[in-house]
Length: 144
Image 1 (tube, rainbow, N blue to C red):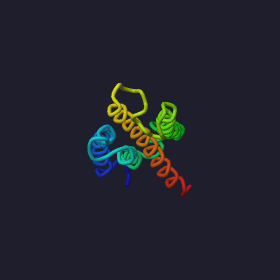
Image 2 (image 1 turned 90 degrees about the vertical axis):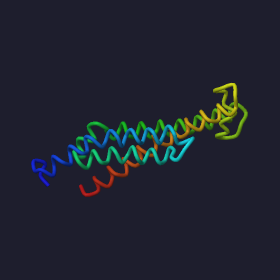
Image 3 (image 1 turned 120 degrees about the vertical axis):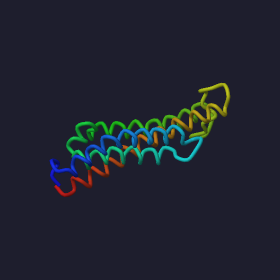
Image 4 (image 1 turned 135 degrees about the horizontal axis):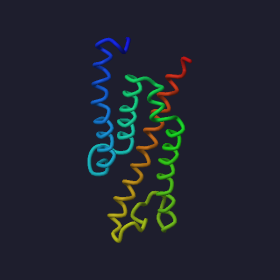
């Protein structure tokens, strides 16, 4: 399909409108995953889907310009590090791995537990998003 025909204009216009809302929905799922449906995995998939939609409509090279592979790998590493460090801090402060209530973030164990869970969900979301995009990039380059 040539980008100069009417269908290309419709796709690009709709993608420009939809991608920000998809990314915003992914952030909503990530931040509200501890108190409602969703969480890190689901949010990571939604965020990756928004970027994949952008890549499909505007081209892989344009997507890689905005979200390069090196940045994706750094984000995946940061996500795994967040997950691991929350678990390590739990052990350091006398708990078991990922026993969030032992981390002295707040004076109340329940509040510390909630914040610890949210940090882990963010780490999972970042990692899943980056790995999903990595899989997408690998499939696209498989034909090269």
